[in-house]
Length: 161
Image (cartoon, rainbow, N blue to C red; front, side, top):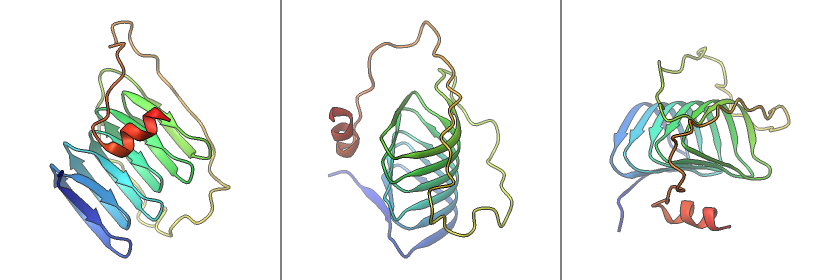
């Protein structure tokens, strides 16, 4: 069985998280998250900051920069504001996006996400203000044509639907 780090619903963490385990967020994290594994943001989960992860499945709120080595899947109840650097993106119906998206071979975050201290401090309860905007850079012609195989069961299941 795969090890997991679970941030429960009524938990708030500010700081840096470095892990080799899958991370499941049901509560609130403000700061840096880095893992060689996957990240799941449940519908009660909120993240504000920088994330470097293998794959991400989001059904919660994310504000900041996220970089995945694999795929980023945003589900119907999710809201994403910021920058997405990924090799594969799936946006399900109902997902709210207001971000720049880069799907380039040279993925990296240049500098940490800078935000005003009180900006987004109040949990976002309405999704009506979210605007879907996409700046999708084309992949180079030498890009790998084979689809990425997700290792996480939730990611694999969502790819098959």
